[in-house]
Length: 495
Image (tube, rainbow, N blue to C red; front, side, top):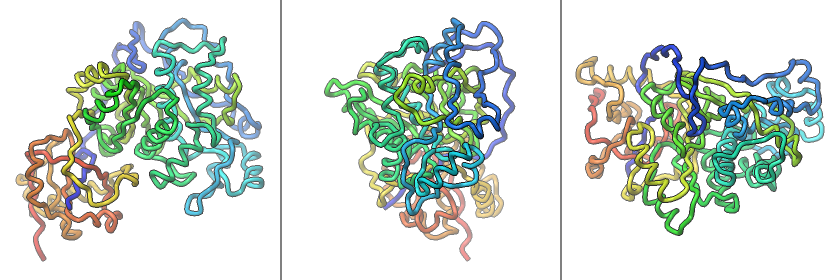
């Protein structure tokens, strides 16, 4: 049984310098705000004095900073309205797994109040009382989900008012309180992560594990207002028949999550316009991505800079009171150049009905990231259980060796193996050096008429290769179809 494996990366390219920033619109989840004057620096996440925060018990980031906003700037009001979830401390303990990491580590002592760390070590030595150092992807996933729920239940035009308590929004925030009984708590994400993706408490989630957890939690809590969540863990592919099935019974509010990897070590420049297009769409609910090994929640952009919330500022455990609710709003956001963005990310879209779906399809027709197909191919059967494994690719360090193999295997004849950026490449032959894993059957011929955009394809004939040679090359595995025109690579010499 063949496995079609996509190496979701581009060939190494030289990063082009960014142009000087120009006057442009600022965008927040599909809303455009004209920039009539040179942009002011973002309200970067601030931190109090290191020693003050180090030994101050239960110090919460000053909730009154949102009260201090007196500007009538509609852009800033929109930013402050977005829900922002961060690291939390001193929440209800999460028991460590025997196979998982220890709750105690040196970095935790540095980043959290040492008094609290020592106290937790004595009272709960086998439990996690904070997600500092490992929960950032879960927190940005919560931000994406929280803002989706805010739009579903309160509307996109809702604006947060720090002077007035909003019961409806507070109810949404309560769903994310870190307690086992809350439907979207860190505890619930951990439970789903263990069951669906093999993630132990204290282990970092990737986009795929986060997406699967969100999908399962939504299905277990239909009262949240989202009828269904469709997930693609490692591609931008959406299948129209699955979407239509959701809306067949007059259901509304479909959340689509797409885990994608858009480059090698950074986002390939060819995707920059598509990312801007996604964030400027009224269907966008943001991107959970970030810098390498550091997740951020992107909610908009300005020119070549993405606007984000940073979850890495620890706060005491979220509780059911107005002061705590305010800690989920901030006027402090950051900016990140697109060429500094990690290529692995989770895209979110909210489709509220059949009419929205039809408009969305037209909107992404020219996208280099999102692909809409009529139906999922049913004649590709993967001979291994890939659904319950998280194949997030965080690095492709083997790319240099792959390039060397291409040249060596062709006897140095670069003319015969010239590969241009965005070509479709059959690189199966270069893997034969590690075993007979590239037997391609005639069944592949029936798939040649379907195109896959901007992807590198590896056709592998031995499913056990992935489990027996994982130390050699990292792969993302999914059902993909092979482009008709590929560039052949000479087989390696025998002997």
